Amino acid sequence: MRLKRIRLRQIRMPLVHHFETSFGRTHERRIVLVEVEDGDGAVGWGEVTCGEAPFYNEEWVDAAWLVLRDFAGPRVLGTEFSSADQIGSLMAVVRGHRMARGGVEAACWELEARRTGQPLWQLIGGTRDETSSGVSIGIQDTVPALLDLIAIEVEAGYQRIKIKIKPGWDVEVVRAVRERFPEVPLMADANSAYTLDDLQVLKALDEFDLMMLEQPLGHDEIFDHAALQRELRTPICLDECIRTDHQAAQAIRLGACRIVNIKLGRVGGYAEAIRIHDTCRDAGVPVWCGGMLESGIGRAHNIALSSLENFTLPGDVSASKRYWKQDIIEPAVEVSPDGRIGMRDQAGLGYALDMDRIDALTERCEDLT
Ligand code: OSB
Ligand code: MG
Image (tube, rainbow, N blue to C red; front, side, top):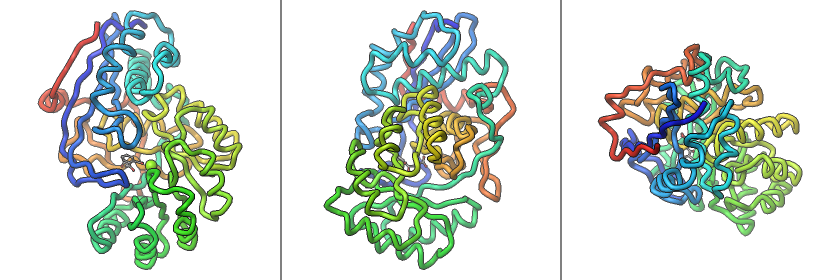
């Protein structure tokens, strides 16, 4: 394969409900989509999963656009490759910006899957034909509002509930959730909002039988997480800290986590995601697939990734309708009444693109050739 064109598109989509984490509130997404095309006219699609501002990590949509246009895109264009597995190394000269690079990498995997006529999840070596779905519920204005939302999602069949926490919205909120839902599989995600100075608060969460506590400490503080894990009964799950397979191996060796959240974008695409998956599997560390409020394209990629054998815990990949009035894929992602999403039989991502909708949402478009 040889790419003759990379089309960058930025779309704008309002969220059905705003989403609040410890670093801020999002009402509307701006999303960079990547369409790659080879010399035979075959195409593949990917999504850059960064946010609108550099708050989750250092990436954001405007930076991703420039990195892809000026540095990563030109490295891939016109270069012969026999497998999408090689795409990451072509762009490895770029430091950081893994979500930007990962959008191109994922698009090339979809291209290869379409060209070879197989579902993407099978091309990457997936063995699960369905994945368990959980929900991530943002910080709300009041505790009763949060409890009402959880009731809706439990009723819908989701297999676990994740709530976002931050200083001042933590122990008493989790206590209220546990009182109302004593049995529900529950976890909390702090998005790096605490430090080791908050040890007493974090230890207080131990009494609520959380499945895990996600990324309580700084985005690059693997060492401090190891110190924290020694003090907690609750398993720590790392998200922001894990960008590479090597970091996953180090975190596990140090005892910094017992679970890993794998996000396709955060780690720069499938090749690294698969390496992290394998390292965790070999160490007996379960993984699950995180989300970044993706459109249907990123969502479909997350579903494919979740077909790998060690994705044994419910992920954050949930139904399109929780985010979008109308998604950009057909059909929209749906979740069964018992909280599962099935892999699809069609080649590539397995969902059709609603090109009229994508065109209508497009704010800017640029072809790299
Ligand atoms: O930390 O997992 C996170 C959303 C934006 C940024 C970071 C995170 C999240 C989520 C939402 O938790 C996951 C989703 O539903 O897509
Ligand atoms: Mg997280």
